[in-house]
Length: 109
Image (cartoon, rainbow, N blue to C red; front, side, top):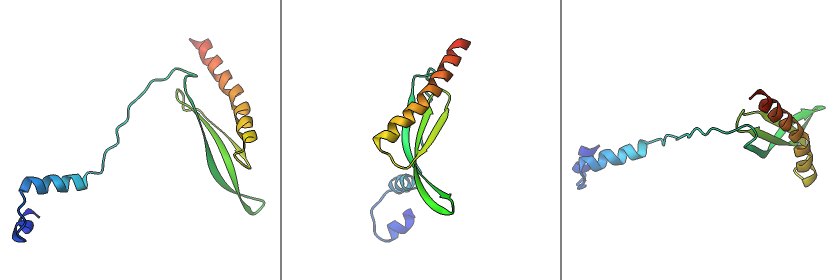
């Protein structure tokens, strides 16, 4: 490649070509940092869309999802929309389950 560029009258060093090609080929490795959490310290919530066939009809539903950082426990509930009522109900259903699991864990230490 470097030789071809020189033959085309480009004034460029081999190192510049090598570094440019390396930069273009670099796929960008991801870095991960492992963080230790205590039980009950972090819980994430998000909405997702689910498409299901119900009675032969394709239906779009909204899925409320909770994930705990310590155990990676997942809890999900389906709703027809993302309105405030659905948000509050999803939390009302999740929190008692989460509190029981935290209580049981604390009893083991």
